[in-house]
Amino acid sequence: MTFEKLPDNQYKKLVFQLRGQYTAILNTFRCYGMNADVDQAIEECTKVAENFGMAVRGNNKPIHILHEPKRRATE
Image (cartoon, rainbow, N blue to C red; front, top):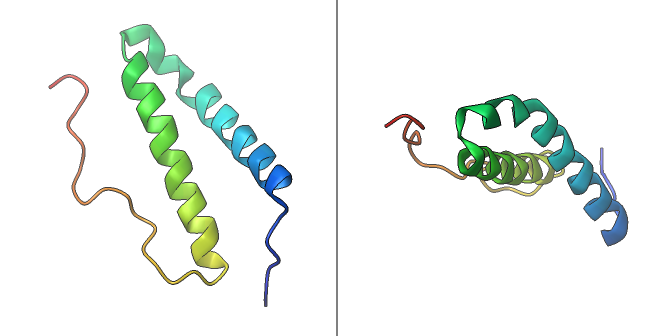
């Protein structure tokens, strides 16, 4: 099974929608003063999702972006 690469404008639209969904899901944590952490988590989740999408289409590289767990927001 092969997948065609989407045109750039469609790809950017899908990534924008993905970020919007992550924002909606993680928005609840903003009330705890975690704005910067939420924004960073959204960008990191988006990058992992993009890497995953490329991996399932045959790009042979790891999807992870972190090599160890992140610090807790309360530390």
